[in-house]
Image (cartoon, rainbow, N blue to C red; front, side, top):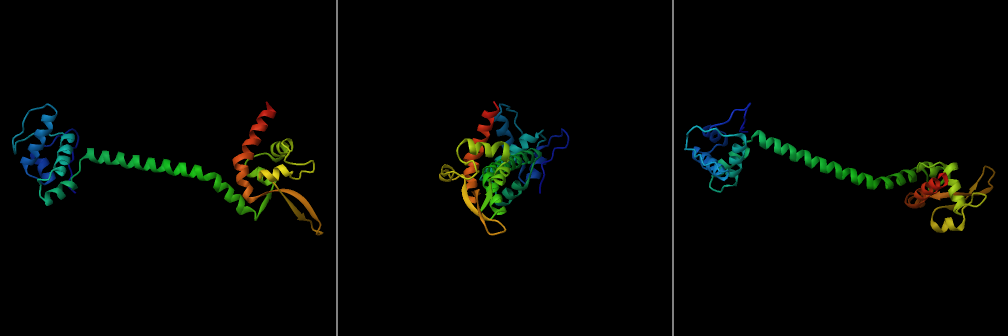
Length: 216
Protein backbone atom coordinates (compact mmCIF):
# COMPACT_ATOMS: atom_id res chain seq x y z
CA UNK A 1 0.00 0.00 0.00
CA UNK A 2 1.32 3.43 -0.83
CA UNK A 3 1.83 5.64 2.17
CA UNK A 4 1.69 9.41 2.41
CA UNK A 5 3.73 9.52 5.58
CA UNK A 6 4.79 12.70 7.34
CA UNK A 7 7.46 11.86 9.93
CA UNK A 8 7.82 14.63 12.45
CA UNK A 9 6.95 18.01 10.95
CA UNK A 10 8.36 17.15 7.49
CA UNK A 11 6.31 18.28 4.54
CA UNK A 12 6.31 16.69 1.09
CA UNK A 13 7.11 18.02 -2.34
CA UNK A 14 4.93 17.82 -5.44
CA UNK A 15 7.19 15.06 -6.76
CA UNK A 16 6.95 13.01 -3.58
CA UNK A 17 3.17 13.26 -3.42
CA UNK A 18 2.86 12.43 -7.13
CA UNK A 19 5.02 9.33 -6.72
CA UNK A 20 3.09 8.22 -3.62
CA UNK A 21 -0.24 8.59 -5.42
CA UNK A 22 0.98 7.24 -8.76
CA UNK A 23 -0.07 10.30 -10.78
CA UNK A 24 1.65 13.00 -12.84
CA UNK A 25 3.26 16.01 -11.21
CA UNK A 26 0.82 18.21 -13.12
CA UNK A 27 -2.14 16.50 -11.48
CA UNK A 28 -0.79 17.16 -7.99
CA UNK A 29 0.10 20.77 -8.88
CA UNK A 30 -3.34 21.43 -10.36
CA UNK A 31 -5.19 20.16 -7.31
CA UNK A 32 -2.79 21.88 -4.91
CA UNK A 33 -3.32 25.21 -6.70
CA UNK A 34 -7.09 24.74 -6.53
CA UNK A 35 -6.92 23.98 -2.81
CA UNK A 36 -4.78 27.01 -2.05
CA UNK A 37 -6.93 29.28 -4.21
CA UNK A 38 -9.97 28.04 -2.28
CA UNK A 39 -8.14 29.06 0.89
CA UNK A 40 -7.27 32.47 -0.59
CA UNK A 41 -3.62 31.46 -0.88
CA UNK A 42 -2.84 32.27 -4.51
CA UNK A 43 0.81 31.17 -4.50
CA UNK A 44 0.88 28.95 -7.59
CA UNK A 45 2.94 25.79 -7.92
CA UNK A 46 4.68 24.97 -11.18
CA UNK A 47 4.80 21.39 -12.46
CA UNK A 48 7.76 19.46 -11.10
CA UNK A 49 8.94 22.28 -8.84
CA UNK A 50 9.56 21.70 -5.17
CA UNK A 51 6.68 22.75 -2.96
CA UNK A 52 5.95 22.36 0.71
CA UNK A 53 2.77 20.29 0.96
CA UNK A 54 1.19 19.70 4.33
CA UNK A 55 -0.46 16.46 5.43
CA UNK A 56 -3.91 18.03 5.23
CA UNK A 57 -3.22 19.28 1.68
CA UNK A 58 -1.91 15.88 0.58
CA UNK A 59 -5.01 14.21 2.00
CA UNK A 60 -7.30 16.65 0.20
CA UNK A 61 -5.34 16.17 -3.06
CA UNK A 62 -5.83 12.43 -2.80
CA UNK A 63 -9.56 12.87 -2.19
CA UNK A 64 -9.94 15.23 -5.15
CA UNK A 65 -8.08 12.86 -7.44
CA UNK A 66 -10.33 9.99 -6.33
CA UNK A 67 -13.40 12.09 -7.14
CA UNK A 68 -12.02 13.16 -10.51
CA UNK A 69 -13.16 11.30 -13.60
CA UNK A 70 -10.15 12.29 -15.70
CA UNK A 71 -7.73 9.69 -14.30
CA UNK A 72 -7.29 6.26 -15.85
CA UNK A 73 -8.41 3.21 -13.89
CA UNK A 74 -4.87 2.18 -12.94
CA UNK A 75 -4.19 5.55 -11.35
CA UNK A 76 -7.53 5.58 -9.54
CA UNK A 77 -6.77 2.16 -8.05
CA UNK A 78 -3.32 3.27 -6.98
CA UNK A 79 -4.61 6.49 -5.48
CA UNK A 80 -7.31 4.64 -3.52
CA UNK A 81 -4.60 2.56 -1.86
CA UNK A 82 -2.54 5.55 -0.70
CA UNK A 83 -3.13 6.64 2.87
CA UNK A 84 -2.13 9.53 5.07
CA UNK A 85 -1.92 9.64 8.86
CA UNK A 86 -4.84 12.07 8.80
CA UNK A 87 -7.01 9.60 6.89
CA UNK A 88 -6.01 6.78 9.22
CA UNK A 89 -6.93 8.92 12.22
CA UNK A 90 -10.28 9.85 10.69
CA UNK A 91 -11.03 6.22 9.87
CA UNK A 92 -10.07 5.17 13.39
CA UNK A 93 -12.47 7.72 14.87
CA UNK A 94 -15.27 6.50 12.59
CA UNK A 95 -14.63 2.90 13.65
CA UNK A 96 -14.59 3.86 17.35
CA UNK A 97 -17.83 5.84 16.93
CA UNK A 98 -19.47 2.90 15.13
CA UNK A 99 -18.53 0.41 17.84
CA UNK A 100 -19.65 2.82 20.57
CA UNK A 101 -23.05 3.22 18.91
CA UNK A 102 -23.28 -0.55 18.47
CA UNK A 103 -22.36 -1.15 22.12
CA UNK A 104 -24.96 1.41 23.25
CA UNK A 105 -27.61 -0.30 21.09
CA UNK A 106 -26.78 -3.72 22.53
CA UNK A 107 -26.90 -2.35 26.08
CA UNK A 108 -30.34 -0.85 25.41
CA UNK A 109 -31.60 -4.13 23.96
CA UNK A 110 -30.22 -6.06 26.93
CA UNK A 111 -31.85 -3.66 29.38
CA UNK A 112 -35.20 -4.03 27.59
CA UNK A 113 -34.88 -7.81 27.56
CA UNK A 114 -33.71 -8.17 31.19
CA UNK A 115 -37.19 -8.44 32.75
CA UNK A 116 -38.14 -11.16 30.27
CA UNK A 117 -34.85 -12.96 30.94
CA UNK A 118 -35.53 -12.87 34.68
CA UNK A 119 -39.01 -14.28 34.19
CA UNK A 120 -37.67 -16.98 31.88
CA UNK A 121 -35.06 -17.96 34.47
CA UNK A 122 -37.75 -18.19 37.12
CA UNK A 123 -39.92 -20.34 34.86
CA UNK A 124 -36.99 -22.65 34.25
CA UNK A 125 -36.57 -23.18 38.00
CA UNK A 126 -40.12 -24.45 38.48
CA UNK A 127 -42.49 -26.36 36.29
CA UNK A 128 -45.71 -24.43 36.71
CA UNK A 129 -45.63 -22.34 39.90
CA UNK A 130 -43.59 -21.10 42.82
CA UNK A 131 -44.39 -20.08 46.36
CA UNK A 132 -44.97 -16.46 47.32
CA UNK A 133 -41.70 -16.57 49.25
CA UNK A 134 -39.73 -17.74 46.22
CA UNK A 135 -41.43 -15.17 43.99
CA UNK A 136 -40.58 -12.38 46.44
CA UNK A 137 -36.92 -13.45 46.62
CA UNK A 138 -36.76 -13.69 42.85
CA UNK A 139 -37.64 -10.01 42.56
CA UNK A 140 -35.37 -8.95 45.43
CA UNK A 141 -38.19 -8.37 47.92
CA UNK A 142 -38.33 -9.50 51.55
CA UNK A 143 -41.15 -12.06 51.90
CA UNK A 144 -42.07 -11.55 55.60
CA UNK A 145 -41.32 -7.84 55.92
CA UNK A 146 -42.64 -6.59 52.59
CA UNK A 147 -44.61 -8.99 50.40
CA UNK A 148 -46.88 -10.84 52.84
CA UNK A 149 -47.82 -7.65 54.77
CA UNK A 150 -48.61 -5.88 51.49
CA UNK A 151 -50.74 -8.72 50.13
CA UNK A 152 -52.69 -8.92 53.37
CA UNK A 153 -53.17 -5.15 53.59
CA UNK A 154 -54.44 -4.97 50.03
CA UNK A 155 -56.86 -7.84 50.52
CA UNK A 156 -55.02 -10.30 48.30
CA UNK A 157 -54.45 -12.84 51.10
CA UNK A 158 -56.79 -14.19 53.74
CA UNK A 159 -55.84 -14.70 57.39
CA UNK A 160 -54.81 -18.22 56.43
CA UNK A 161 -52.54 -16.77 53.70
CA UNK A 162 -54.71 -18.13 50.92
CA UNK A 163 -55.42 -16.07 47.79
CA UNK A 164 -58.58 -14.03 47.72
CA UNK A 165 -60.78 -13.80 44.66
CA UNK A 166 -59.36 -10.31 44.03
CA UNK A 167 -55.82 -11.70 43.84
CA UNK A 168 -56.95 -14.43 41.47
CA UNK A 169 -58.89 -11.97 39.29
CA UNK A 170 -55.89 -9.62 39.11
CA UNK A 171 -53.67 -12.49 38.01
CA UNK A 172 -51.34 -12.10 40.99
CA UNK A 173 -51.94 -15.37 42.84
CA UNK A 174 -53.48 -18.79 42.35
CA UNK A 175 -54.71 -21.56 44.66
CA UNK A 176 -53.06 -24.95 44.52
CA UNK A 177 -53.78 -28.15 46.42
CA UNK A 178 -50.49 -29.69 47.56
CA UNK A 179 -50.60 -33.25 48.91
CA UNK A 180 -48.46 -34.07 51.93
CA UNK A 181 -46.62 -37.35 52.45
CA UNK A 182 -49.82 -38.97 53.66
CA UNK A 183 -51.71 -37.98 50.53
CA UNK A 184 -53.76 -35.31 52.25
CA UNK A 185 -54.14 -32.14 50.12
CA UNK A 186 -53.50 -28.74 51.66
CA UNK A 187 -54.39 -25.47 49.92
CA UNK A 188 -51.55 -23.06 49.24
CA UNK A 189 -51.23 -19.66 47.61
CA UNK A 190 -48.80 -19.84 44.70
CA UNK A 191 -47.56 -17.66 41.83
CA UNK A 192 -48.07 -19.31 38.47
CA UNK A 193 -45.32 -18.95 35.88
CA UNK A 194 -47.42 -16.73 33.64
CA UNK A 195 -48.22 -14.50 36.64
CA UNK A 196 -44.54 -13.58 37.09
CA UNK A 197 -44.89 -10.96 34.39
CA UNK A 198 -47.77 -9.39 36.35
CA UNK A 199 -45.54 -9.32 39.39
CA UNK A 200 -42.75 -7.68 37.46
CA UNK A 201 -45.06 -5.09 35.89
CA UNK A 202 -47.29 -4.32 38.88
CA UNK A 203 -46.79 -6.13 42.19
CA UNK A 204 -43.10 -5.32 42.67
CA UNK A 205 -43.64 -1.60 42.09
CA UNK A 206 -46.71 -1.56 44.34
CA UNK A 207 -44.93 -3.41 47.15
CA UNK A 208 -42.01 -0.96 47.09
CA UNK A 209 -44.33 2.06 47.11
CA UNK A 210 -46.45 0.60 49.92
CA UNK A 211 -43.34 -0.24 51.99
CA UNK A 212 -41.99 3.27 51.51
CA UNK A 213 -45.28 4.78 52.67
CA UNK A 214 -45.43 2.46 55.67
CA UNK A 215 -41.90 3.42 56.74
CA UNK A 216 -42.59 7.12 56.25
